[in-house]
Image 1 (cartoon, helix red, strand yellow):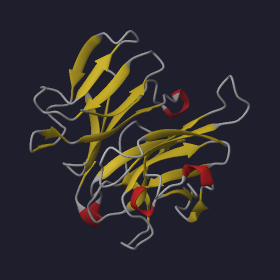
Image 2 (image 1 turned 90 degrees about the vertical axis):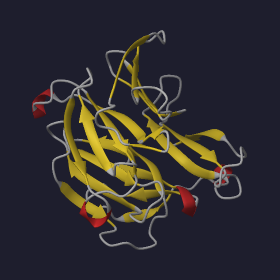
Image 3 (image 1 turned 180 degrees about the vertical axis):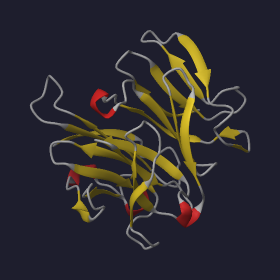
Length: 244
């Protein structure tokens, strides 16, 4: 059972797996799919035979900020924490806490400049987006939480990405059946992504969202939206390509 995948610029493929019958929650593969290594068992939570690794995202390197190498971030929704690793699997830093202190069931992350944004998350009571400093490649300090107190603004914000051209966060607000638009400096809601053909709600709820910056074959950016019914019954499982 796999929950997330990302790729480094060096061609390493990092996969988050959930089945705890296997000894490590993060797998490392090469471009051909050959298994290279695995890590994370000492740090990622476990419950009822499953690893808690939900999201996994590679943070870009930034030599000017003193971050010479990419980092691998894992969102652990069993342990209510986020953590960053080197490409070799060495734990670099983590932040934890359940509820208002830090995280509920944190699900996904996205990077913009020196900040990391978390969707929090998949179940639980937090239902928010958080921005943290991450210049060092570690979770440093909270910069804002939106909303600052529990409200109905989000209901299981399950995934998010940063759309560079518009400088907006896109949040898969799963159980509101929408892709919410968030201003990354302040956390203010700016509306919803308009695409009637997604048919969110009747056509499934958004579980994942990712941005592809101007693919070579196309002139515009693409937003990928992954949908499924929730509760999950095998219906409306689609990968949508939205032309921005």
